[in-house]
Image (cartoon, rainbow, N blue to C red; front, side):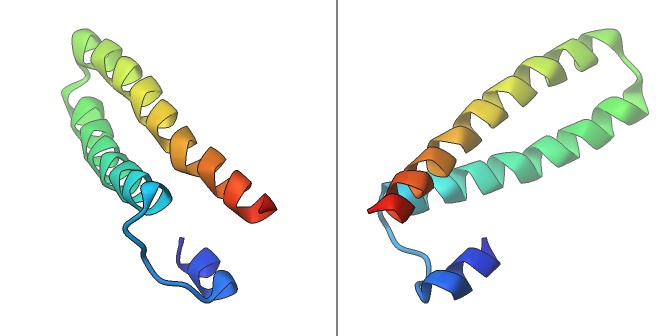
Length: 74
């Protein structure tokens, strides 16, 4: 994220790409904490919930990724 900001010469913008990107980064941070908790607990149900949450976080991350592709092509 920081490297792309330097390459483009822009900073954070309150547009769809910026807001969804920030949301994805926050979700990924929460995802990392959730992963640590699941590893410590070693609970099967928590692992299944983590897997479902991982798919959700990945899907949310795809939104700013794809928007960034279209912004880069324009």
